Image 1 (cartoon, rainbow, N blue to C red):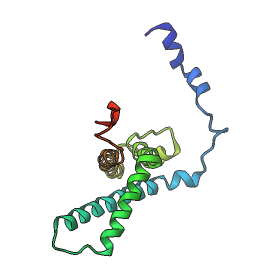
Image 2: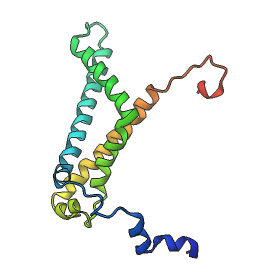
Image 3: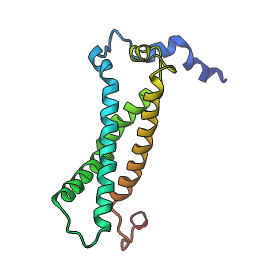
Amino acid sequence: MDQTVSIFFHKQNMDFLCLDKKYYNIPSFVQQIFMLIMYIVFGVQVITLLAMLYCLVVVNKKGRKSSSLFGYAIRYLAFYGLFLTTIGLMPMYNSFMATAYCNTDTELGAKLSCYEGIYFLHLAVSIIGLIFLSTFLFIFGKLYIDLNPCSTAPFAQT
């Protein structure tokens, strides 16, 4: 490794760059409910998937009159899509990645006991949640891009 690059990866330099726990102390109750946050986000994603499936079934049955539940499902999907594409991506992504990347140096990782026992259930939920999240982000990202095929600007025609 190059001498100029290797100096950044010494433990003393990394400790200087990282925030010390005495200056930035996360409250213990936040660390204790971290897994609950991940499961709440996963539950929201499952509800979103069910709402999408319900809307697809209602749209495919052309003779059936749409109900008020269909209207609420469309409003929920519109709100979730807007939330996901603006501010919801990073907190949701972080809640899943922090579980997938188990670090025993943190207080949460010490309580979780990485790579043994119940951790594999949390890891499976985290991976499934990341797959749902990336799928929803792809779908809503395509829906919320404002395209204009008649525009003279080449970037708007795609």
